[in-house]
Image (cartoon, rainbow, N blue to C red):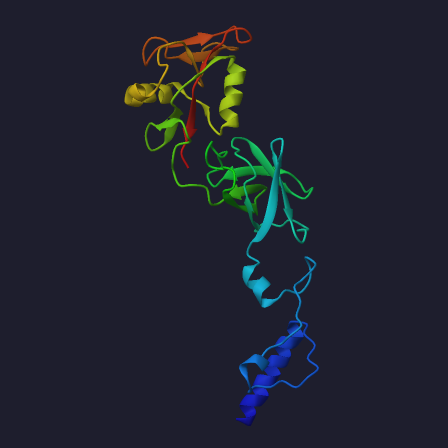
Length: 257
């Protein structure tokens, strides 16, 4: 028993030394439960301070506040994280609905892309106001780990297991406006294959079909031209060269997670 007590005392002393705890009273191994504790260990106030057991258990992530400024999500932590290293896990409440091409940074650090795990921009309806987001800092980007499972953004229709399409169109847009609108929503202009598949498979659920030409993302045989589809049938297709004047309708496609 004496050897066991000696071993325990040595172990506790070693633990105390490693934890930077100064014990100026005898260690009691028996006694009332409310006396078998160490009092006076405060919470760390600096990012390089020694941590308590609670902090060690919970330090796999840090809670932070988020504010959107233009296309960048500004994240603030307490205490400040310096430097920002790969493997840092952050959680925050999304301050407002957002999607598309976004950036994030921590308290004035370098801005890095904010992407889904598949490397695609968040789509409309995935980062909504008040949702708790979880991001991992690694490989020069912030990766969103807890976005909803595969689903279509609001006001879109699922075409197949790979993508969704806007149910309605937006009229009167130049090709560059159309591309920007889809990008801001986390989508893109549909390719001719995607448009034809959506038209054939779920065309009866889409509004505005065959009312006007719609912009698509497809290659042309001529430079400085863009492509349109859907004026008369699911396979209607043409090229448009007067890009700064001619407008058409816009319908975006979205890749599922």
